[in-house]
Image (cartoon, rainbow, N blue to C red):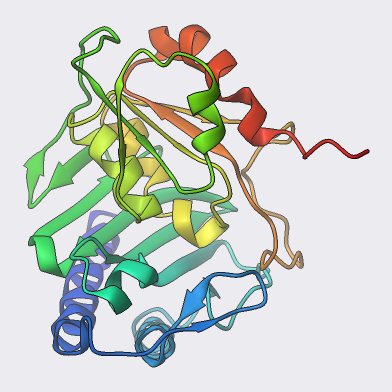
Length: 271
């Protein structure tokens, strides 16, 4: 099994580096268009999605694929890769250097390995969580990472997404930041930079790669929706399913923060 995991890490590193090299040449130079859900897409997203799917089919022909741009239905395979070719497409198209490529490897519908590469930042995260015959661990540029032990305070940072501004209606115990990339918002919790992060409407490709990394680094992942996120369901179309999420540096802060962000996971009131 160790040989398998060595091949998985090597593959993820190689293919995201290859994709990143080309994307850097297109960074800030491409036009974006709106998709049906209001998010943006560029030709770079579509190229990267295709390149990653083809690479996985060659290296792991018995593995399934779920991707943001093409493959939305969860396949009937034990192993499945979940692809976000460019997380932070708005940043990418506007020249803001916080974007990356995310890969999550699921076993029986649950992420056990994540790999996320941010070319402009020179940062590459990966991690294992409850992977078969593989120790848990989280890393940035091959160096182990861990969440912060600090208590919430006015000098600690917490990340929001653009759709989670409703938390500002109440006093908040941390300094707030907004970065424009769901995976980076969440991963800097794992890295010990922020004490927490919330994402209001991430899709499965936004979170599959970071889910194992955050928990392996010592963090807590809290779904703000009533139903559990994993395992995924064979045959379900995940193109329009959102997973409001709270990530925290420590389990002990869950009771303090959940009441502050619960409204993010609730449907809007109707008149």
